[in-house]
Amino acid sequence: MSSDLWGYAFARNAILASTLLGVMASTLGVFVLLRRMSFVGAGVSHAAFGGAALGYALGLDPLLSALVFSLTGALLLPSARGRLLKEDGGVGIFFSFGMALGLLVLGFLRGTRVDLFGYLFGNVLAVDLGDLVWLLATASLSLGFVLAFYRKLLLSTFDPDFARVIGVRVEALDKALLLLVSACVVVGMKVVGAVLVSAMLVIPAATARYLTSSFSGMVIASVVVGLISSWAGLWLSFELDLPSGPAVVLLSSLLFAAARIYRSLMGR
Image (cartoon, rainbow, N blue to C red; front, side):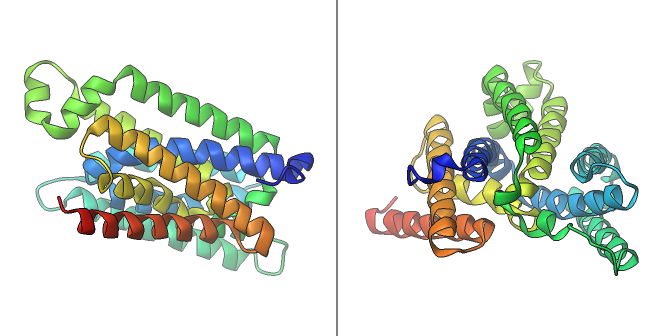
């Protein structure tokens, strides 16, 4: 980053927000990818837009209403699963309902000044101190959870049946992880937008999967990829006047493609 940018408050906020989101999303993304929860992240990110729109219409803080909406949906998802409906079906319904609600609210608010597209597509330059506090709190909680339950998360990810046998509460860990992913998605909407925040959960972890064969190495590599794509994407958005969210995700996708090609050339 250019040192000149650090002299502006909006640039400092953008850099700090991208860093916090990059570390948090990349760390949680490893578990999201290995537990095959990628569709859950996408569903929550789109449903959160409905919560933000509803909060805006009711005169509430859109970020807070999106958080409550998403966490409630995350808690209800396991109960929606049954013999005739798998979890991905419940996510699909939640996904559709949230987006439809958001677009319906936009229709009702037509003619008034509605600043909801920032939550849909992201605007890192609009991040303020309050958004940074939300990001810092969520990142601290998420990383603290991963550090505190690292061994149990590792075991329940690769061998949940054995984990249950030795007393690990796998279902409770799954629910806690789902809630943290939902919180990560909501606070990340302001940075890259609801449409792209799920990519920040998946692409760095998928890239790391091609770069290392160890779980701890995958976590570290995922964080490195997430930070590189966040910082480089933000720099490009400043220098070339590009939208920050798409720039970050595009660079992350290019890193994934490079890692895939590298793994193909090197062999398994």
